[in-house]
Each structure stands twice: as structure tokens, then as C-alpha cells.
Image (cartoon, rainbow, N blue to C red; front, side):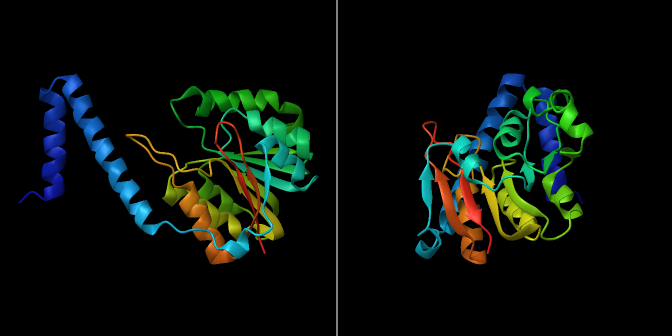
Length: 234
């Protein structure tokens, strides 16, 4: 007897073989929208507000460049989700880190997230790589982060996958690696959704802060509304 999952795979393969490509694309698009709606509903049901006492010291700053100016200088730092290294260059310029770990798989077919972007980074930061100021860590964050000792980082900036499950995993993994009083920062602290995708950053960050007692110290108010957050780890 063939299992339901086996039947589903067979039907999917059969449909791709016999149906016109535009029809297959339309079916895939409908399925993606259904998944997005289901994920949106799931996250709405579980949404938490950050506790007021964790926000009472928060400051609003215009953008993430100015956020960098408020973070510790000459620290041990990680950027999780690097792409072509544009923000990495700004981290180096504004915070003068002792060590900057760049963490990214660079395995996407999209050029800015691809191996070509990694090649560009190796050229752009050749001097800093040679003197061990910049350390390239190629791999998925939940695998790479475990290789660092506990209480290693002064601050980190997370800008990798933006769905709830991955952001939650990144926060939980990096928490153990933070020095007391260190900062966990990240991008896209905003509710955003399309017909095929949805961010879960806000839900994951609020839940993490409530669970750990980490305080929101900075929040950006950018004109493009791709806001950043900074939590202080207690």
C-alpha cells in the first residue's frame, strides 16, 4: 500500500510532467499563498507584546548607522547574515571591532547572497582578513554559533532568515555566547507580509526578551521602516 505522502509526491511529479508550465506555476503560487496565510494566522495567535518594564529605558534613533555609534567599540562582534558585506564595512568603520566574525552560508542563487558575494568580501576585506580582524565563517548560523565559547561576544547583529522559527533559533543559540551586559541587535523588527512570505522577527524578539529579561535599549525609526533593535543581555 502506498502512503498518503507517497501518493502526494507521485501526483506532484505527474502534474509537473503533464500540465503546462504556467498552470504548474499558478498552482505553486496558490500553495505558497495558503502557506503564508497559515503562517500568518499561527503567528497572530502566538504574538506577544514585550513587557513594559523591558522597554522603559529604550531610546529611539533615526537609523542603524547611528545605532552602530552607540554600540561598544573595539569589541568581539558577529554579523549573522552578511550578503555582500555592505553593512560589514560600516561596522568596521564605526565600531573598530577587535574581531568581526562574518557568518553566512553564501549559497543562494541570488547574486548578493551567493558565492560570488563571498568572493567579493574576500577581496574587499583582504587586509582585515589577513590580520585576523575579520574572520569569515561560512555556514548556517545555528551550526556556526555553537563553535564559539560561551560569553565570547560583546555584541552581535542578526540579519539572516527572517521567519519566526529561524530568528528564534538564532536568538537562543547566540544568547549563550554573549558576555553579560552584551547587546543582541538585529534588522527588520517590523511586521511585514506578502502573498508568499512573512517576517516573524517581532514575535521572536518579543518572546525572547520576555523569556530572558533582556532589555530593549535602542530601536531605530527608519524612513523605509526596516527598523533595527538592540537588546541588552542581563
